Image (cartoon, rainbow, N blue to C red; front, top):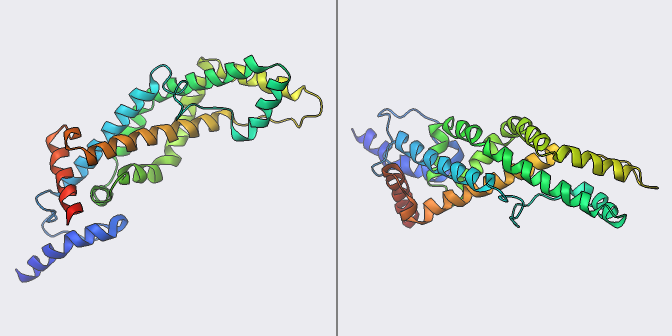
Length: 243
């Protein structure tokens, strides 16, 4: 019994300071003494917070002008194509550049609407070990985990969605026309940057940003904890933060 009590007393400190390496051992009670919440509850709480963030983020960004008229997320020409844009505008192709920008943003808005199931699947597959470390990890901990753990897979899954959306909004057509116009100009080095990769990267950055905003809202504002599991888990995180 003494050994069991000792184990219970040190486990919360192991969880608090080891973050990425939590639950490397087997718990004989299949429960950790986390101040009244179980392993499963901690995992459920952080997953629900991230799912909420993914839902709010995709809804916000997928509406019309979610990207196009949003100063924080509007997608412009890729950095390596900024000179192309400047040159095209100089030679009177400004309207063509504007059309490219509008349509790649419309493509991102359309693609994000299809992204929710991809994010939800990534979130629900999160392990209990990772989730518990995230609960006490502070602002954005869940989003940062999600970004590190899933960006490569999400990029591959998201690219065909982006391509389909870019084709549907005719962004691909306008981009091709702009590149052809540029490459015909005298004295320029021919170039054709990867539009899909650029839009995919920017769309995922925007989604992660929105998920983090929602996660932090739940961490900071008790009124944003709209379910019993969110209240229970993040009230516990509040108590840990005060100690």
